[in-house]
Structure formats: structure tokens, C-alpha cells
Image 1 (cartoon, rainbow, N blue to C red):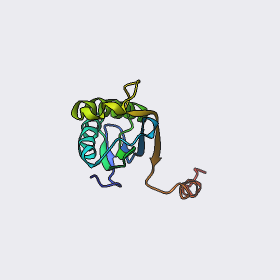
Image 2 (cartoon, helix red, strand yellow; image 1 turned 90 degrees about the vertical axis):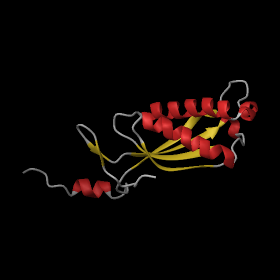
Image 3 (cartoon, helix red, strand yellow; image 1 turned 30 degrees about the vertical axis):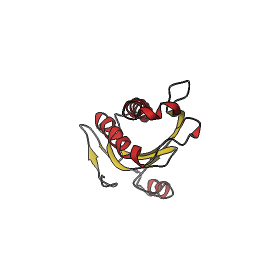
Image 4 (cartoon, rainbow, N blue to C red; image 1 turned 30 degrees about the horizontal axis):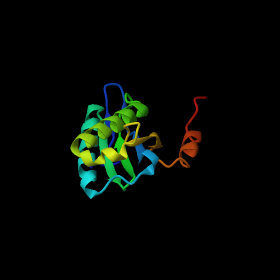
Length: 138
């Protein structure tokens, strides 16, 4: 995985922008086993590459998935989430036909909601003090 503190550059900016994403299965149904997580990681890697995001960490349990990604300012987190959930749902259904009974009537693997938390390079408690200590022009 990628170094968590690595500074990335784009055409007009320098950034370290991370998000912790958590997707929960529909009705928190226990869907995944070890045999699903490796293909799921590969699927999410392919989607993240399309958005120029870098993986930092990946893991999951039987009813939810955790992703930590470094993503550029040009990517809206909700677009990344929608793509990750849609593509992974479709491809897992193709790869594992036995999962179909977990999709219920709505043909969805994932719950409609998700958790997203941004992460910064400095702890939130440090930033106000840093900003206050800046020299104001006189």
C-alpha cells in the first residue's frame, strides 16, 4: 500500500488528502468470506485507479468494508463512493453467482448509505493553534 504521509502533486496544487470509507451490506447481511475479500480488493483497486486515487489500506468483515484512500482535490468523495459501490456490486455478482440471494429485491449488495471521514496530516487539535500563531501583516 501507499505511504500515508506522501505528498502528491497535480498541475496547480500540492496535496495530502485522505478519506476513510466504510460500506455496509444491505440490511447488514453477512455476505463476505475470505474468498470474497481478495477479488473485492482487486475490483476496488481498478475503480480507484480510474479516479487517480491511491490505496492506503483495505480490509473488511462479513458485512462491511473499510477503505483508506489518498485522493486528489479533483475527485468528489461521493462520486468515488458511488462508483466503488456500483462497480463492486456488479462485478461480485458476476464472479460469485452464489451471492445473488444477498441482493434482495432491489438488486443491491450495499446499503444506500456509507461512512466517510477525512483525515489530515496534523491532528485537528493542533491546527487552530498553528493558524493563530501565523504572523499577520502589520
